Length: 288
Image (tube, rainbow, N blue to C red; front, top):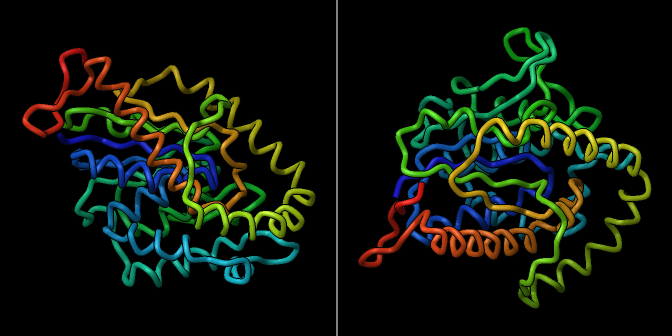
């Protein structure tokens, strides 16, 4: 079954996209189109270029000293250094139009005060522009335009995939209502998490509280206004309380959570008749 995948913004919660993509592929979904904003554009671009496995291996092996290399005074993430590392992992520059999977990175153009879809040109520039959170990462200047995070105007960009000739649209919402999810991460994941948590909390949470709250409030309000515009066939909801947007040390546990949430959403879609399984293959249901 061919699907268009929409990956929402939400900072570090976007690591859940990795587990979701893995689970969708394991279930037999063929991802032929991706649209993403902010962290969703980063994960989506890596998947579209065939580089997501390398990225996952890197982020799940980072310890605190590794993370410290990507900081700048006073204890803020350095977007330029992060994308230099991403380039190193991928190994080459890609143009979006040459990718094996159709890809759209959504950014905000401060020059003309509007949302823009980056569907051609340098992949890394597009991902960097789409994830340039104001006040956290530097804007990207592209073709005389000043570009920042796509989440400023659109946290879940379904519109770019509406015209795709695919069976289903699956969207991942990183700002879903708070709830507890009943999954148990592996012992190794929990152990790694506990080691990093105390140090990360001391360095970031107390120092960044006003910025963090402002960003979350902005994104939440914008998302509620925009959500009614387009509806996906299947929505995978990632509860906002699963992590703060800046909890980039939680990659392993968020990836596992993404797998759990994808399984949960697929199970619900089967019950509703949106999808069905015939002769071991997943197919479009009758109610879409």
